[in-house]
Amino acid sequence: MDVNQLQRRWFDLTASLFREGFLDDQYTQLQQLQDESNPDFVFEVVSLFFDDSERLLNDLATALDQPVVDFRKVDAHVHQFKGSSSSIGAQRVKNVCIAFRNYCEENNREGCWRCLQQVKHEYALVKSKLESLFRLEQEIVAAGGSVPMME
Image (cartoon, rainbow, N blue to C red; front, side, top):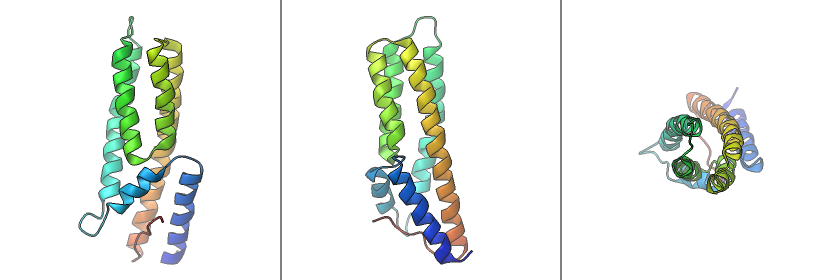
């Protein structure tokens, strides 16, 4: 596949991520911080998000699985997850975290479990889609092209 076709696929995939609400403008702002001196900036930031998210999801499951749930602790984990998802523009993950925090305030264990399942689902989706985007970016570079920027 030639560079132009790969770049068109990149634009289409990126546009769908925004259109479907997976990403918001924060992701665009991250891309604008990437330059020749730090060409892997977005990949590195998002990889840190993936690592943090795996840990936070495990911490949340552990906290909710206690005989007596410390909802303040659960809320602190959710707050951290909301912040990290916001920082990379993972809009759908962030939105589930907002609902999750409401259940924490209500000390609603069942609501928290449902939100945990939902946040795991949204996280898995955005992770898969961003991994596809990064693979496509690698293909573009390998074909001798440069990764486009979103407007």
